[in-house]
Image 1 (cartoon, rainbow, N blue to C red):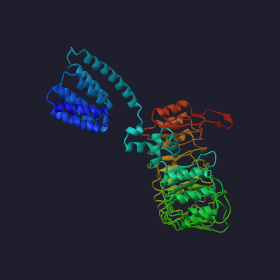
Image 2 (image 1 turned 90 degrees about the vertical axis):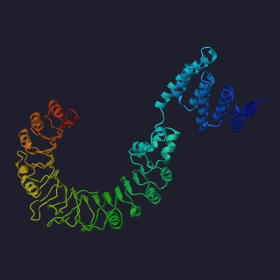
Image 3 (image 1 turned 60 degrees about the vertical axis):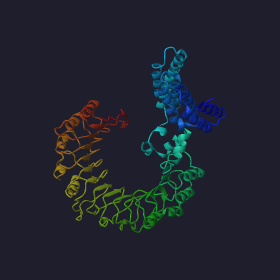
Image 4 (image 1 turned 180 degrees about the vertical axis):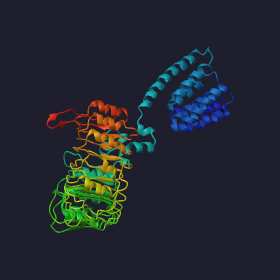
Length: 549
């Protein structure tokens, strides 16, 4: 017996005993000693089978041996069968089928058995390739998509959806449990029952200190202490509960890491003032249900980094002292509701807020138009009484948006005085102002805003008629017009949407009972979006529709 045959015999014996590494060594020695093509082909077949057993990391080496068999004996079926088998193990069914087809063109016609084997394998692989393609279509996206794409998909999903997606499969649960955005926001709003403390604790443990935003609605106050203590990176907290929150728990919110606080809970005014004065890094504070204060004037200040402040007292038009806002060097937006801000003899003075860009005053006792800084861009005043006839009403050079909705005492003369103080107004809201005479737009055009105004609301104005719509054509940049609750008809709508050079994009016609569907469809046809709602009007049941072009 030759050396090659002896080594091959020893290799087959080791293969049968499951000693594949030893078998591979014997087959390698035998291949070096083999001289005839038949012996080489047989030994290569044995070594390729051994490499298959050694694991998928050896499949490429096994495939090289199979292809060497195909070169050594082109008409032998063994090389094509071995190569096809390895390619199937590698799930490369398309190439495996091509290998069988290639072999059918080369083996001799006399090899009936070999041809039958190749044809059978070719048909099986074709069927497996088809099934594999169907499986590929339904493959788990987490296993094929790049991490960046998966992050783009999941980053916009709310907390509740991310938790539900963990029920898809074990793989999804494992991924989402480790996904850094899963527990960055804990949203417990919209629940029917109070969230158990043990549930919140479990989520905080999974977050491992990565939570930056928490939203609570129904909860025990002690849970707030646990969240603030455990979440070292917490920067935003929203408490949507309307229950009273004791002062002791409010003090827990005086932490350096908190930047945004949105509190809908009942709380004392003293607690809010304490938060403003002591929270070092607080940038946004919204307190929506503050309790009554004493009759003395209230000075609010000390928020060095505060950029947005919303204070709403729980009792509308309450009596008591006035509010004085001071010492907010970074404040950009101020929203006050249900409190007195002037003395009755002098207007409120906000000029110390040199960076103030937006001022909203709602349901306040305001006798005089307030003194505002030159930096102001947006002003919204919703009060019943407002005296515009004060000598300190001066130029507002930066004002872009003015809102005076539901101001029952504002008339054209007062409004013209205010409009004359502005130079580049882009938005004007005069909805539900019954004393504004809208028979003509001269009061608006005389103030010099015909070339800058982009939004105008005259909703609920009893004097607005179709005749005025022609004058609105002089507002060259008007894009949005709200004339809901007016007596406009389809003729007026046509005047607005068909005027030459019109830039109108949106038209508010809610509860305009004289406007038919044909006028709305005509507006949609020229690219104007229309809001037209009809519900119950003066006790009569009407149609309800919203048409958006």
